[in-house]
Amino acid sequence: MVHKKLMAARIRLQGTKLKKSGWNDFSKYHYFELGDFLPEIQNIFHDIGLCGVVSYDANYATLSITDTDDGTVIVIASPMAAAQLKGAHPIQNLGAVETYQRRYLWMTAMEIVEHDAIDSSSHDAPRKVEEPKAIPKAEPKKYVKGDKLPPEWVEPNPPWTIEIDAEHPAQWSQLLVDATKLNLDMAKTEDDVKDMYKVNRQHYDKVKAASPDIHAEIMDLFKEAKGKF
Image (cartoon, rainbow, N blue to C red):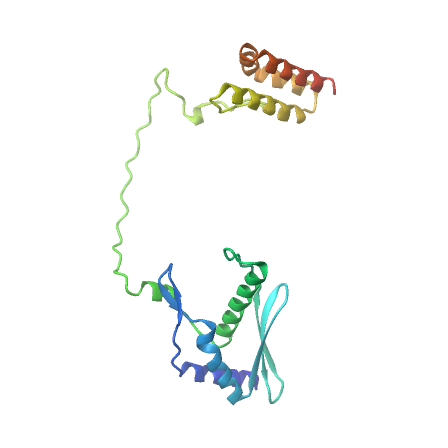
């Protein structure tokens, strides 16, 4: 009997004039708030002999609709979700989630439909659909000596290559030290350590001329790394 009564309740609710009191200021459309339809539903349920109870657990929110005459039940469930309201406490976020879940569960049960997309765009002027423009095929660029080669023409860097993007000399030197440490931490053999030095030797020669102390620090790192193997 619960199915028959629920269908009767839906038909009676469709015959009422519900007003949308909610307003989405961002997308510019009205929507139903819980108070717009729940009091009317409760009156209909009381007259027909139905009772709806909402409950929550960690995973689902459920609406159980029971026929008060024969005890038959319909259960409608919705997965729980989190809310992050700006400046709200955790308990306030939980309350917002439960309010939204109640609203959607009752709307599902009573087949209350909101045409948000239509409501928000019904007064907009029709948009003109433009035909896609043909994109002219680019002529292949000829390479002139001195030009920067495109990425697909450049051979990939060898393993252990260090690339540093820093304009200030002191920052560049410190980044070189940090990158060297990271590389050496990943070394598996003594050959790895030797390859690291060979691949990045231009960096180490540069820092040797600019900052002998930092160069000595880097050489100590290599010496310590080689000593592990």
